[in-house]
Amino acid sequence: MMDWSASILKIADAKPPKDRPLDGIDLLPILEGKQGIQERALFWRRVGPDFVKTHRAVRQGNWKYIDEPNGAQYLYDLSNDIAEKNNLAADQKMRSAEMKQLIIQWESRVDPPLYPVQPSDGKKSD
Image 1 (cartoon, rainbow, N blue to C red):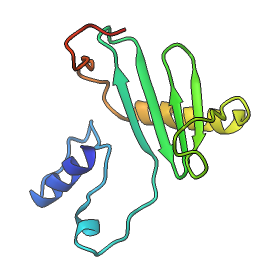
Image 2: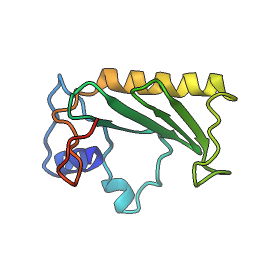
Image 3: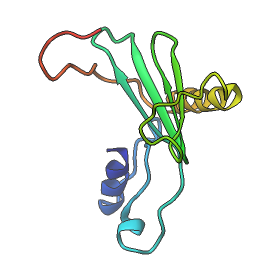
Image 4: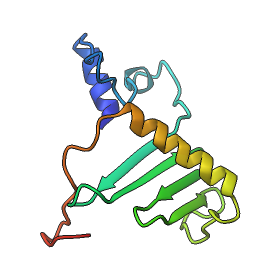
């Protein structure tokens, strides 16, 4: 979604607010075939209805790291484990710490979530 925001601003020849930089890139050069796809880390988060429990994740290259609100950490090498069955967090502590730091740095640059994610069945979740 953030990439589309950057692209639409570029089309409109508009600038994002200086106090709120965009978390994304302009996709037009890629869509127009003027530039190849850039290798970069992708981040996402899901906030529970209580606004406290935040599930966070980052994908960088073949690595995917998930940080759960209960303290659980998951690290997967998607080049060898696309089904995410082999959690490498305990064996790859340094990489897990680096990936968690990427999330912390990302969250320091972006706005906090505006609203929690509600379950699709309408029931409250934890």
